[in-house]
Length: 622
Image 1 (tube, one colour):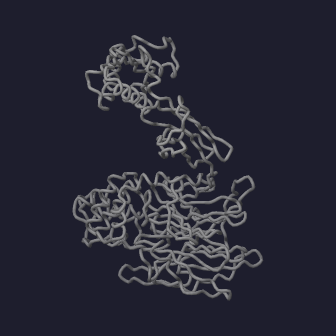
Image 2: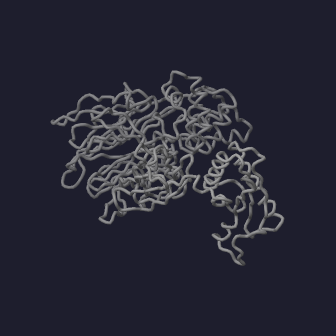
């Protein structure tokens, strides 16, 4: 959504260091007219002729940035910074890198930006919290999302609002519309679709009363359904500024109101604070109809685009627009406000710290109003915006270009449930405090880590419709893992009895499990490391303990290859133990290839092969 004129309905001029010349004149004119697709073609033609200095590369980066082709934008910005650029170029490059999930590289460019412009609020915020990503990832999942089937294949669809049983949204799918130069797409129209009882949506149709030959959408509707607010272009009111040099009529996006009479939208009127000098767009009317929230770059804005509000009086007149202030607005862009029935403000920002591009934030206007990133999967590394929620149907919508085009996703709140873990000593039955408890998803991704309290308990808020794994770790105890499958109750109680490591030491052997390896690999797995940590603990407690490691492969591959693979596995196993501080003269290893199969099978299953890929431990001296 870096293509701000399309989605934010606001012409955001990119300020660049001038290096125009006769060679770039044609491309520059297209760029200045916001015809970025055609400008790209001209700039690329120049590079084919050998003209690819920092100016041309930056212009290509900016052009791709504005149509949100992040891969090509990254490519040309990387070339542009080979020569010195202005601070904003480094900032945009950093944002593009973040959108491409290159966080380390993004941080490096943000450091350059912060050095060049240390007083900029974006630089200050970054330097305060450069390692922000783990905290964002740790946000509890609030919604499940699903792409709507009514999205067009390769055109923009966004800004969905469900009123009653009708879904309203903006789309450029109408091939009969004229094409505008920004993205070479048809102009936007307002569409509607019926919301069915089974949760499906009917075929979209145009809202003919509101659409013109210009951009329209998105919309907001009063609680009684009789008044609609929507965005459209100022050309509708003959409001525009003439640029004689560029031979352009520069319009803005403005807000309009219509009244429903006999089932039709009529009496379309512009709002009194519209202007040809600035944009007003993306309306959201409060449930009591007394406050209209919108986005604008009008005088008094903190950043490029801010969120504003205006009082709607009983007589239909309006108060003076008020900026929501620096708690919400930043030097970046904030837009697409949505005010819920319980006065939660949802909005999109690229100035607050997020995963990349625009993220959706929420703020409780009845409390401190501090914005909070609502986390994944609503937010992604791309642009996520236009979040709305229908409390009656318990369903929301968010727009995102995470798959390349702006599309609409259904957002369903996650059922709030809890996993309570209670950890005890298996021998004494005493509750164990300070146990590290890790929760993982079904793909073994670590979601969060906590420690048990004095009562041996720790809890996680979870989605009960998802499978989890709970791991418990404590020095001196055998690591344990428990699978927690989907559950129906509000709380799942997991009891874990940790076995003291001393209890697994027998007279002539150690009751350790073998460690297993992935196919054709010799690296120590997460589970293998936990088992080896037991061995390390025992060897630290028993200084006379000397261990031999026997490593094996499955029966696939040649004998010679398997001998070498098993030898590498033995070395990995031994090196892990030595890396934990055990002297090298107390542990040795040898590979046996496939000569000592645990399961000797002619046609082995994957499970049988896995059992054969192992390292075992033998006590040589005690």
